[in-house]
Length: 132
Image (cartoon, rainbow, N blue to C red):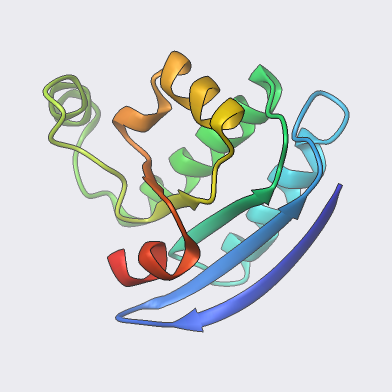
């Protein structure tokens, strides 16, 4: 897996992670470590571009969820009970972590696992950046 990062200044500064390769049990630690490095260096808003990600496993989803939790802890927008309530009703999407360019297979995994209930999925990077 290769990861390239760029910074974009939209309404807020956004770090963009462009992933090339599967995010699975062999690579999830690299993915999570890179995201955590960005966060440790001041990233508060993160977009993960999945253009070249043909597959994500449960390990990759777990890493993405850990990244979500790390960003959420920095912002502390809602408490855990309120988060669960708003996610269940469809009223919550993370304003800090978003994804773009999911293949049909990866989108299916997101939907099957429920990740689309709290992480915004955008059809392209430009629309995702504009949503921050």
